[in-house]
Length: 393
Image 1 (cartoon, rainbow, N blue to C red):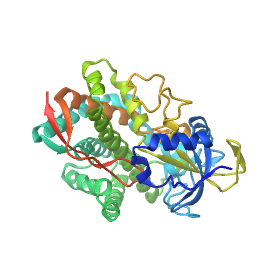
Image 2 (image 1 turned 120 degrees about the horizontal axis):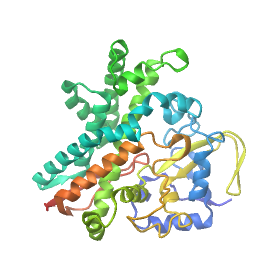
Image 3 (image 1 turned 30 degrees about the vertical axis):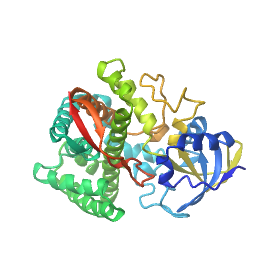
């Protein structure tokens, strides 16, 4: 057995410039390693693409109900296990996902594409007019606004909801973010109860009146799943867009390829999703003794798929540490795989495309003002701040 004393759960590791070499060396030693984590004790770390895909596809052997993310603590089962999409296995997972599916289909996203494009344009117009801006805050406005539309948040509540979500997602400290969620959840609970009595055709109403097996879903479960959807719907877009724009600013040749039309936007989005891999990891728990990469994983062992490592595996991606905007095929794992493939993937890609297109249409050069600040999150790894000067076209 190969073990490493390197704590892969340290968020600081993933912002280090030598990260590619560190991960390549670990993977070459053994793509499955027994590693110690600061909060969750020993876990099996999966660093190769093929073995990561094997774990993510096999929900029967690798369960989500023991937790889908590190940070719960050793031996602890997270609240909401079996009650939230992210913490449920098939067939329960499919049952929880069913009412939300219609809001995230490619067809539904296409119907909303015009408003998404207009919103992205307004956001970038404002950022350009300011001259100097924090691009993390700027790009966050789009997924927050789109989520308010999906939830049909009343106009009078939107300023408050955006402010609470800002605190929950952009809070500078863990306490600030926790306080934001503590305000968001009661608001969602109030809306669920109101719309259960007088439903509309929005996401909250659909979830609130959903009857799996003929009985209404418990209110607490509705709220937990809505909070989960809001978090996922905002964070992936926010961090991928911010790091994507930073990457394009640092590689002006890529900016030119996109601006000239030499690189296709849809392929570029997938490549930036692969490159950034902002959801750094996925946690699973073995339901039985099973062999993985030549190692015996025992029932109850925790297995961590390191998404960034899998998405930069040279066995799966040619020149993985380079950004190839025309990379195809690009079967990255940034949005998951198997039963838990991201329900909001079509919407996330539409929002990213709208943000990048709006920036390319309006901005000649993005000039970073000082170093960007990476966050300390293993769950949604990204930037806390990206101050930049936008030079208009």
